[in-house]
Length: 225
Image (cartoon, rainbow, N blue to C red; front, side):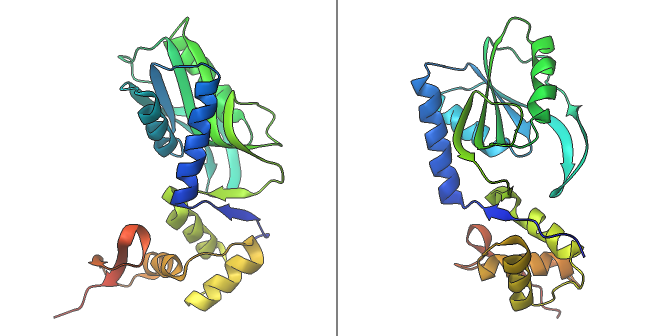
């Protein structure tokens, strides 16, 4: 059985609050970017929101690979580089969290090479105190290390936990107990059902209108005729 891993689940409303805090901190420092670069995939949502706060129309992304699920793996490397046509003099690089610091260690030299002379700042929603690389801006510092689960990755992360569990929980109650015991997570039951449906689906699923589930949708099984 895999080792317990303490986690924290960030809701959409908390994400919005963190993004607002981060925007105000950047504004207070007097930094006005003309290019926002998201670190894919976790930086997509915060980068877009920050671009909205600062009225930046020039938004790009690069992809840095260094994790596969909740467990650390290979050293970070650029998978998808910055597009050649992108221009900017005041650059804000955005990610969701600073953990090992290797993302920015790889991303910054790459962007400096593509945009020589550009002023570069880094920003994250949550900065882990154990991270050896200090970003320029963060909304909140995480003192005690834990794996952060953002709302745009909840199915992926919980699905990884589900598939790695031995024995694998097959019911909502069993899944809930596992997450509470091993990961200190309290997850809405409708989300647990979504993960179970997507992990164990024996047939194609179609979304059904419902006040429950992710984004106001609940996954429903297609009836055979």
